[in-house]
Structures are given as C-alpha cells and as structure tokens.
Length: 136
Image (tube, rainbow, N blue to C red; front, side, top):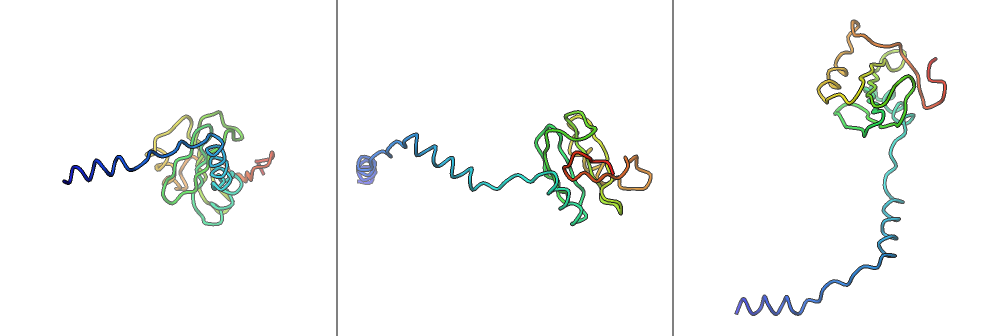
C-alpha cells in the first residue's frame, strides 16, 4: 500500500515548467542590481585608518579575508608590479607599507601583519586615497 501511495504521488505531481530565458535574464539583472558593491581602495583605506586595522591590498588577484584586517582587491597599485599584496599597518602618520611580491601564503601575510615592530623593514608612510598622487 505504501509503495502504491508513493507511485501515485509521483505520477500526480507534474514536472516543473521550464523557465523562459527572458525570465532568467531578468532574475540575473535583479540579482546584480541588489548585490552589495565591492569596496573601493579609497573606502577600504578610510575604514582601516578609522578602525586602526591593517589594510591588505591584493594587487592583480582576488582579496582574501584575514580576521582583524580590512581587505580589498585592485587591478593596479602605485610602484607595484602585479601580482602582489601590500600590507598597510596603522601608524601615527597613516599606514606604514610592507610589499609582499607575488601571491604570498596566508602565513606570510599574517607574519607581515604581526611585524609592526620598529625594527621591521617598512617603506615610508603613504597616504594613497585612490588619487593619482599617492606619495605625500
């Protein structure tokens, strides 16, 4: 009896109608329209400075999230050949910069974030808010 009920339920259920391509395109357009926008470098820089968090700039590669940091992906960055990761560490003068060439591992990025000691080999502080003149 149970098998009969299962078979009859399957036969009574009609297959789902095919979705028209126009409907699919409309759904995709709505999804893109309401998707959250990716943050820009300038927005990420301001957030990192305001929250005193390290800024991770992934140049020429997708951004990866690290707890306690602000991450952003960009296609190009001043004085950097793609790909690279630029680590900006909070300091009194803005963000102190460490360049990690290539596609570094998560461990090497974490090590760079922890290397905020005065003896660390840091480049001068920069204020690059997305304008063409990033050295001040």
